[in-house]
Image (tube, rainbow, N blue to C red; front, side, top):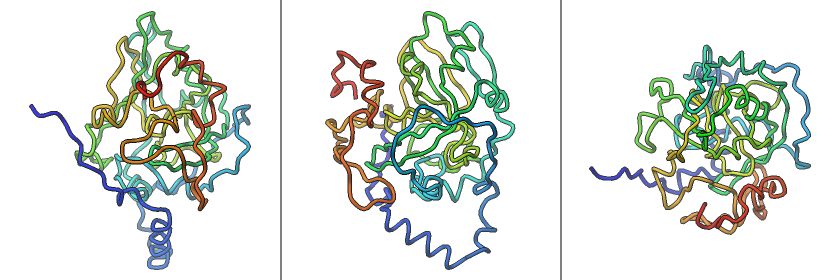
Length: 310
């Protein structure tokens, strides 16, 4: 059997900002309100989240406009172009929805989204999001520390890693009909990373429930890691003894390691990671080690060679 090799994604698939904006403007001019009426139901729907508290976790930087956060996305389950998720994700049905928590735990449980919303007080945390293609955003995510859920299920001493598995349903997620990745999407963390207070079980942004294209109804966000680590539309959280093989590790092991920590000193084989372009800005800025969260998370990797454990 030949090893799985994903098709090469040309740079043209990583939509330049100016081209994306001109395309969106053309669609608006061509269709106006009639085009909006043809968009799949739910893509632009907004539902407010109540009783959300401001968090101590924040950055003193200007927020990326909501329209950009919800229209410029990586979500290959709905296509590889940045504008495809916002146009295609209306097919995703996010209610009812359950998340199975299992594996090396004393109290396995199946959570509904409604139960997650009540599990711990919701906080708005302003985090930087840095994507491996060298673009970034500043997003007001809403959720609570993943550790709060972990405490509920009481991991055993054999639980060394946490694996996240996302929904696999090609009818709802048309991008899964392609071989760009091996589905379902899988990601993972070490237990100490999962327990870190910055690791956010995320249920909303900008005061509202997560839009489908941003990973509805539940995703994780680790602000010191590249965005592809933040598994979206999660249906299973598994506690395991051995390091799981993630989707991108399987697809391109020489390009995507297990840790995916933002490290400007380790280039992607096809581009530099030393600088990034903040969405909405013209000039590039210097990429910060651990995306600017070194004070909080660097001790997790003390003694590790981060050029090998990338």
